[in-house]
Amino acid sequence: MTRLVFLGPPGAGKGTQAKQFSVLCAVPHISTGDILRSAVSQGTELGKKAQLYMNAGELVPDVLILDLIRERLSSPDVSPGWLLDGFPRNVEQAIFLDTLLEEIGQPFECVVNLDVPDEVLVSRLVQRGLDEGRADDTEGTIRNRLEVYRQRTEPLIDFYRSRQQLVSIDGNQPIEVVTAELNKIVS
Ligand code: AP5
Image 1 (tube, rainbow, N blue to C red):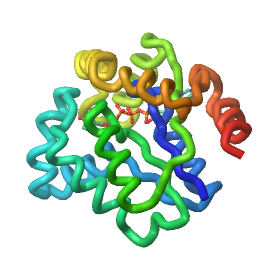
Image 2: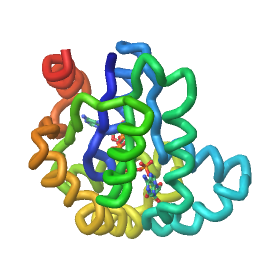
Image 3: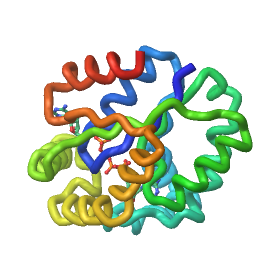
Image 4: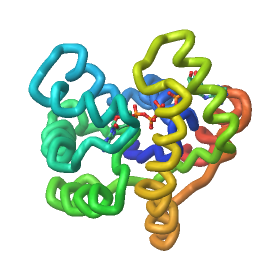
């Protein structure tokens, strides 16, 4: 049974590592960013409401996110486990997750925190913006995403550390080295 939460600033490699792990452990990779981007590209009501926040590098309001997570974690395909990427993003979401997991009887193993210096994050994301054209990968928006991360998401490091659920990995290493460290920790 694999249930992990990936935490870290924008560009730390949460998605990259979670995608690989998802294949390795045969459990779904649940990325709130991917779910929201798909809603935006399909032009759904959720997508229309979320787009402005995402393009500005702000968090999408909890009221749009929490039901989505409840529904996703209640789906039958997550019974062998899951990898959460990009959720929780603030203390309110973390408390919601605790309550939800208790309700549905799915305790998680640990929170993997990927640590990467800001300038490396900015250069990775600027490069991705050039390569893939993701709307929020422009330098101004990237800097705001980092600021929002510091204010809203970083407090989760202490939140989970104080509960001895946090494992930190140096994410400023080649992708395969980070994967190998992750493997050691969770196997
Ligand atoms: P989201 O999609 O979650 O974006 P993010 O946190 O900014 O994460 P990224 O996807 O940019 O980074 P990552 O850590 O996954 O790194 P990745 O592996 O992609 O959220 C987008 C927006 O949606 C938010 O701003 C917000 O508006 C909204 N949102 C999402 N969830 C929300 C929530 N719960 N509540 C409210 N709003 C929410 O890698 C980045 C790049 O670096 C890639 O090009 C990759 O190839 C490269 N790379 C990765 N690892 C390495 C490495 N080790 N060495 C070199 N390059 C690497």
